[in-house]
Image 1 (cartoon, chains in turn brown, purple):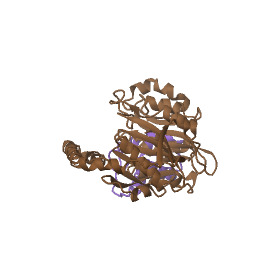
Image 2 (cartoon, rainbow over the protein chains, first blue to last red):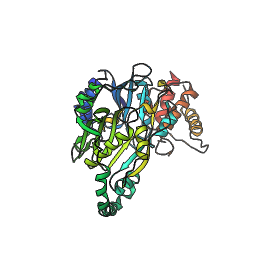
Image 3 (tube, one colour):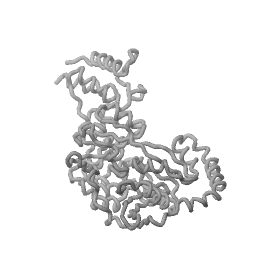
Image 4 (tube, helix red, strand yellow):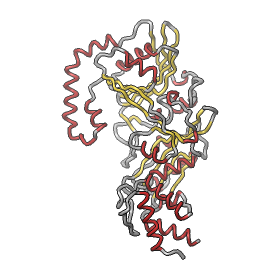
Length: 357
Length: 82
């Protein structure tokens, strides 16, 4: 067993190595290699992937790292954990040592989002600060009993045809009522929304922790980690997201009475929408929510999630007939080296690697 | 020269402390699959406890390469014999 630290400059070489070609589980996809290799915030010798492999190169565990900068209180290099996986059998004892390896590489300047499955690892390691989870809201525009239930309880997969039938039935019953949504989701004449190009994205706001500027945004859009495909590339498993039937980024400018009130960066993945970045004028949350539901309805969204404080509150108060609202949360963790003073409410939904998927 | 059997006994007592199970018995062939609670975090805590007990240090590469109790005891013996 050996530990391989792969630097940005070595990624392409690793992709063409015999070890990569022979490992039954791949630790990184081609599109992630292309993206990481072009990361404007990564230096050539930054470690971006740590792999625990057998002597024959078979990968038993890996942790992916995304170099970035934080601008609080001063500009500092940080690493986001972009993926973390270990083989449940042969790699049972490897996850935490890999996290420790990543911690050493980043000198403790490590950030991650923690799903309920991995949160105990961060807590037990005692290396991470675990703040209160950031609260948000999910809007469901279509009956999604099948998706929601199977996401929470995969063991119920055998009920899939029945749940799909139930969703269809609800859709049919709901159709006459849904016609009224056209009225509810239409834009008032004072509001205008216009799709723009990534190059028109404004400079980051001063309070933004990660200051993703036009160069970074252009790189993100040019090198997505999700490719539009109906089938996964290759026949070997990659344990994280790599393809979707539809994956798009949309940029908008919102005007109220001809005055700019917001810039939206919206991502769409198989009908599921997120708002990675939002720049909004003071007290314009209700107006932006109206624009968002209008856009989401137009685009046939099935689901939308935001962790933006102001928007979540506004959505809770808004009259949205036949849209099911559900409270949700997002847990960040970061190395104690970064201190306790980072404010999760200053994180935007797209910060870290979230923007890529 | 350190006695391999006495190392195994001391390692066993550390395992019992870390896993809070005084009935835990080890053989050289014991692996993480034989102890349900032996996950990767417990693995780190265990190695840390062994480092403290024997006044030694494990390299990260060693930590990931241990396949069973024999590997752990072998590494401890090697370090103590140096």
